[in-house]
Length: 218
Image (cartoon, rainbow, N blue to C red; front, side, top):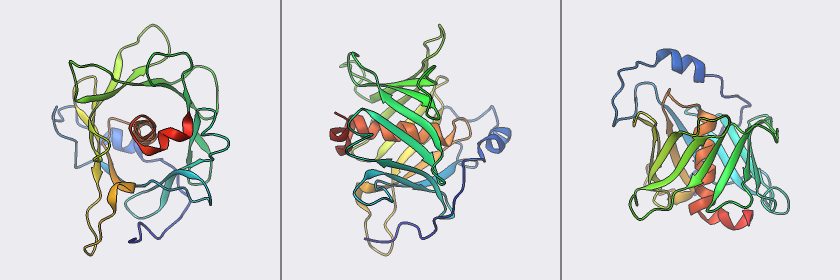
């Protein structure tokens, strides 16, 4: 397999606020703001031995996010932790119990109260393009924040905000030297309208809903 990225330098996602300041409100409804988008490489593999998870690199090859989904612990109780390169928990995803359909609550850090948002698998014969919805979890405002369309199996998805702007994309990684990476290595393009950690949490939960790792959380 071709090398994904060589560097493993501890970094944190500190560029989101700077990118938001560069955002122009007149961005197109149907196109990602490519000029300000961050391109991440997602590797569906944990850095730890005998673990299932994700490793995420920035455009310079530095480690940005990691998920070490131990089969005997976090996977079995329906809890997944997204960490930065140093292992600091950023978001914790917990499967919503006694819920109709596949639904998750996402919390800041390792807290277990006041979830930041929820992600629910979309099931409807009227809109087959939609894969999942991201909604506000706190307060009375239950409006949808993001809607994900496309095919996760083909690593071809788009994330739209409530204004129908495309704010993130999942794409297959280009061949390098004639070597194909397959579906385990792909691109995550993140626009300035959405935090990179939130975009990565969406990827993780799409994989739980539509990918092979869903068997580790049952």
